[in-house]
Image 1 (cartoon, rainbow, N blue to C red):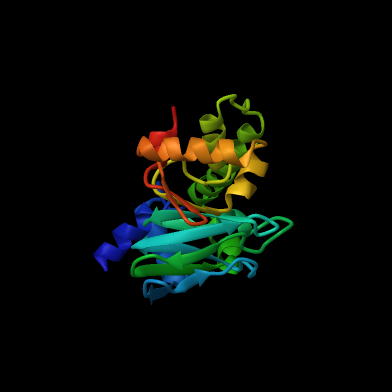
Image 2: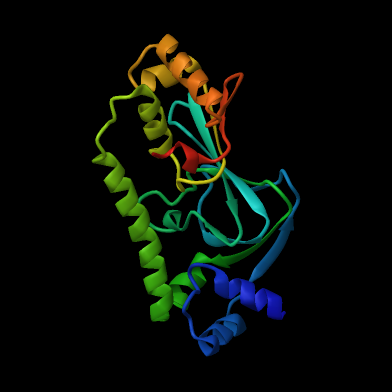
Length: 221
């Protein structure tokens, strides 16, 4: 119980919360703990977001596709992690990504009703929630005003950075060479040469219809 208590306090929305307040919350809320096997879908794109899903331990793979399904980005997130808190409110309250257990994963869920009626009464929780949403909005806004680089390799990196949540760790991009060339406004041949050069430098790995970036930080100048 002590381990679970400490783990919950590490979650982004509860950090800074007084122990007595957190103990009071645990006494009121119905926490749903679930163990998931590797490969099990935790949350599917398009389903309604009616609860907060916290990853307590393990690693998940989060995949997001373009509107025409021409390419898909997959990111990997280690616990502790909160799945799409921005999808709980707003005009669109459906999940935008599919989240799958990459290893065995333990989760805890809290209903939207309890978040609104009880958790929002705590100032620290409200601030944590607003900071998460604000940071995400600011990051997305800043990306819109980033100057497009001239070098093709830099434009490929910029394309990747503009579609992911965290600029670090392993990423997988499933895309055809033609689609990538169209997305960054260049020729298929030039993109192919640039990608092969980046592979020789150890920045990425090329597979059929798939680009694997072992560590995105190495690609960022």
